[in-house]
Structures are given as C-alpha cells and as structure tokens.
Image (cartoon, rainbow, N blue to C red; front, side, top):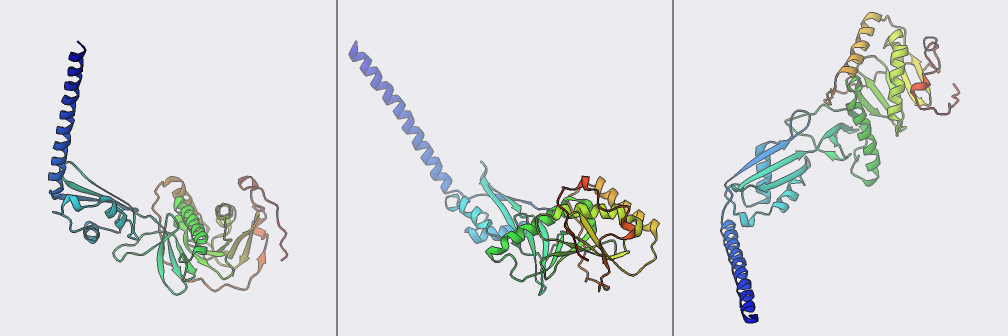
Length: 329
C-alpha cells in the first residue's frame, strides 16, 4: 500500500514537471521567434500646449532614428524601449516619452511636450522660453506661443545654479498672469530694472507700474486692481505716468501732464476687461509685442492725490494686514 502511494506521488511530480518543461520550451520558442521578428508599424501621438505643438510626426521619427537602427522593420530583439525613451527625453522640448509594443508588433510613441509659461528677452536681444519647471527651453522657428514677456534680463539667465530661484520667481509671476484673464490681457511686458524691481507696461493706459521682485507679486496685483477700480476708472488711465506698488498697504502715483479723458470710453474699456476676467475660463494668454518705455516726466510723487482721497488708503479688508511704513516724500 505504501509503495503504491509512493509511485503515485512520483508519477504526479513527473507529470507536472513535464508540463512545466513543455511550457518553458514553448515560451522560449515563442520568444526566439519574436526576437527574429521586426516591428511592422508605428504610431506617434504628441501632446502639446496652447492648441499646438513644437514637434511633428516627422521630427519625432528623426529622433527615433537617432536612437535606433531604424524605425519600421527593426528587429524587436535589438529595440531597447527604455533606452530610446531616455534618449527622447533629452530633447529640449520633450517632457515625457512613453513607448510600447502592442500584440500586433506596432510601436506606440507618446510624447508630452514641455509647457512654456514665459518668454524671456536678455539685454543683448537673446530670447528663450521658460517652462513650467522654471527651466529654459529654446524657441521654435515654425511656431510661437503667446505667454507673458519679461525683458531686460542678463544674458546668462538660467545658465547658473544661483539663477534657479530667480527663474522660479519669474515662472510664478507668469503663472499668476496666465491664470487671470484680465491680467493676461492687460499686462503687455515686464521689464527688469537696475535696482532689481520690475516695471510692468500695460496695454490700456500710458503709465508704468513699478513692482517689487519677490513673493509679494500676487498681493501687488490685488493692490493694482483696487487702484484700477477705485481711482483710474474715475480719473482715466492716462492721468498718472507712474504707479508704484512697492510699499505696504499703499499706492504711490506720479502725475503726468493733464490730458483730456474720454471717461465713457475708458469706463467701457475697463468694464470690458473686468467682464472678460470674470467670464473667460481659458488658460490661453494673449501676448503683445514689447514696446519701449516712454520718457517719464519729472516726478511729482505724492502718496495721496486729491482723486485718491475718497479711495485710499486701500480697502485693507481685501488685503493681508501688514504694518504701514512711513515714507518721507
């Protein structure tokens, strides 16, 4: 009886061992045949931003050829998916590259491009984009992207380690502009000045807006919006030549020469911009070509003008409370 059970156990083990060995042999044969096969076709999908892309199918195919023996017809055994993916991601416009074969030996190539958020111009006229990670990316000959423009930057911007925080601040400023349809339509250009601050050139109005560099950019935009609503809508966008937002809980305006203001036209322009900022939900921004700063008149700086008395100090309920600094005029 014991001998019979032992024989049955041995036969059972041999049976499953034979099945396992057969499966391994079949799998090895299938792998061997597949390694001798060549992939038959490929598909390329490119995910760009702002309704278009920097790359096209031909340019991606050229990139594939740089990292493989070919495209169609290459042996599957020599095609290294991970290596090709890493090679594609070295391209300055590509953020993510994903490759895989389906069961019909068709290669699927998925490309996700970097997202430009700002256009940078250096003092010598060189220009690059800044992407969503605060890194430089080159321009494209066949396509431009409408993003906020920053000028007056040093030529080595982004090429040194110490520039990384500065680039991240520019990126954050640009994102705040892009996310607000009013400011993306009103902010034409941000110019870097020698003291490290910014001068914003608006689309509507012949004034320059001075901004402090740093983490208070969003707060300064809120102050400027209040000034627009409470003062410039009443006085006209050409009343002041300089609007300075660099002081806590205070807006300092400098007079320009008196000009005749069509209040109805100005009110309609502001109302249109404000309505656009409330109704539009698009993340596509409008970029206007940089225009030179107009010569400033001699400063007649006042902290509170007659037109501002009924509106300033600003509505501090809409702003974070901070200690007010005294300014000696």
